[in-house]
Length: 72
Image (cartoon, rainbow, N blue to C red; front, side):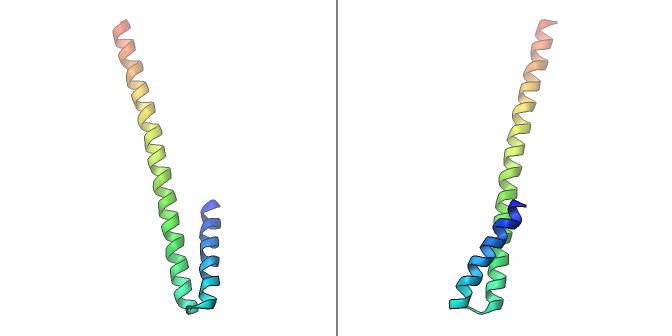
């Protein structure tokens, strides 16, 4: 939902700029490209944060397993 909102806002901003300077087709393409760039950036950020969360949980699990081995 948020991604669609950001992409739409980027598209509208570029459409407004296009009314002053560019052709409608150019604005459509640039708005779509910026929407895709924003989508990819947000996807990468989410992926990296999820990876970090999984990594820390895996580390804590391995520490727990080591503690169990030492207690035995």
